[in-house]
Amino acid sequence: MARSMTSSFMLVAGRDDPIEVKLPLPPSTSDLRADAGKKHSKLQRSLSTVLALRRYFDLWERSDAHVRHDLLELRLPRAAAVLAALPASPRFTLNQGVLPFALRCRLGLRHGLNGPEVAELDARCSRRGPGSALGVEVLRHEVRCRIRRHDAVGIACADGTAAAGGGVVREPAGVLHCPVGSGVPVTPDLLAYWPRRKPVTVDVVVSNCIGLARTPAQHLAQAAAAKERGTGYPENLPVARAMHRDALAALAVARAARPRQPATVAAAVAAETAARDHLTNAYRPGQAEAARQANVSFHPLNMSAMGGHGRGARAAVAAIAHPGDGLSLGETGERFEAADVVYNTRLHRQYLVLSMAVAFWNASYSGADDVAAGRPPIPWGAGAAAVAAAAAVACS
Image (cartoon, rainbow, N blue to C red; front, side, top):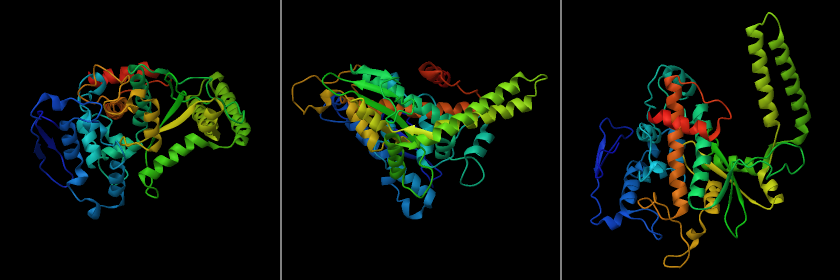
């Protein structure tokens, strides 16, 4: 973890001692400032190069299939974006404990979390032998991490669009409809619009890239295709709805019984939950066709468990970015301006990428740390306020 602006200490897989890398500051402060022609400042490019450890160590030949899979995920576009974010404002600031956790995940080390529930967390997430789970295993298998980072990315994407002056609606209801008229709601995570542009709908999907039969890039492509084309069949709905109605009726009977039997109620609750999940997965309409019928664009914002972007995510960022990003260097026109972006980038798409990366890792660490500490989960439906409250707890 960084101790000064010119020195970085890094933990490296296979080494007991950290490596210290000294980086001289640019000779003039103007070199720290990004402009429309540079995605990152000189200092950021140096840090990104140094911290991309795959270029320093040839791990591929001496690694097993699991580590190779992790290395491929680290090579996904923008997987290292969080390492290039300078804390110019709260939007780009990692919470306490997030950077060591992110580095541990990227280096294939143990998660390093502490708390009374760590043993249960390890038992639930560890897939590569006994002992403490790896950081990347926590990212992939801990449900609370998965839920919280999904919500955080959507909120960061919406806030970043609004900061540039674009119109944005979170989880717009009634914009998209099932293409086959099944009545199943189609609600994307985000609707963004700019003057003289077609509105864009975006749905966030974080693929855990579990399974060695596909590469991480193929996992992301599969997740994007499921959002675009949908899953299941409308013919499955009648049976699934009947099963859910029966489960609800059985739950009502169990709760109304006197004397009340806690074991019976618990079994009925579990059955209702399973029936509801079955109904949810019986048929999910494809959002690409629904968007076409509504005369809007659709992009699946697909990310990996370690923050890498798929093609859909890159297309989504480009589609909702400020129109000034398309101007050439020196070309006149309105460009994106923000008070907290001077030392990161002047391009809105990079602003979005960096803010999403910071939100992604803050939320991932917050969820994992809450589980390890035994804190109760945030209730369903709490929305943006719950995510903000979780971030405040993580900072305290």
